[in-house]
Length: 258
Image (cartoon, rainbow, N blue to C red; front, side):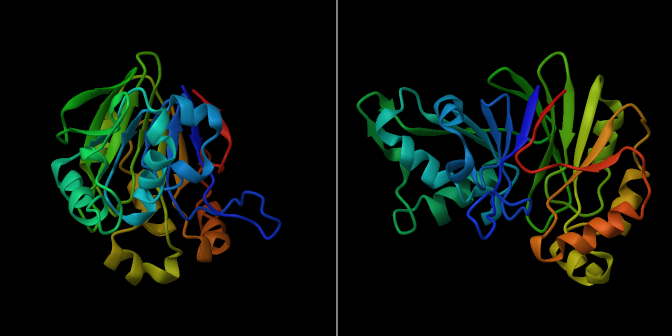
């Protein structure tokens, strides 16, 4: 599998930044997990290939690029963009985003080839297919209903926590997974902002260390994602201080192959 965290911030010269404001993780240039920067940072090849978007939850940094992605492709789509999400997330999208006041309700619109967007609800804990991938959503501990995912192409498997605070079900699933190559886990705030992290249901490096202790396997690498840009350097220093050998930062824009 090829996995890429799309860029979502820019340097003063206009180039992509290592800072992450939005979340969009592409698998094999075909499946998007969350859509924060999908419209803005995907390549022309990726725009031609991505027709499935899996959403962990409906916070803006995970869906911001979705309306623009459908909008950009509207006239050229030969099949609908398929939005895989829980019933709760679909309800939020229809009520608060695709409501004609904020953006057109694409689920009601057609081009010359047919519908341009459709919803495919999934239930947490139940395995479902997304293109060539087998996917299982695991409820995690965020401020709103949210899921992490176990993703497999039949040969390799990786997991991603999505936005979360302390969790147990996710680690049970990780411990039981076979052929697990990597775990993407969040760490949003430095330790000094533990109160804010707790209020918003995110992790700090200290909390991350506690979470990794729940993992019973040593055959995979852990990659940290979702560092808040304003505290990135401080959080990285504290992550490095944990001195965990198989713990790395997931580099923005880099393509990982597992």
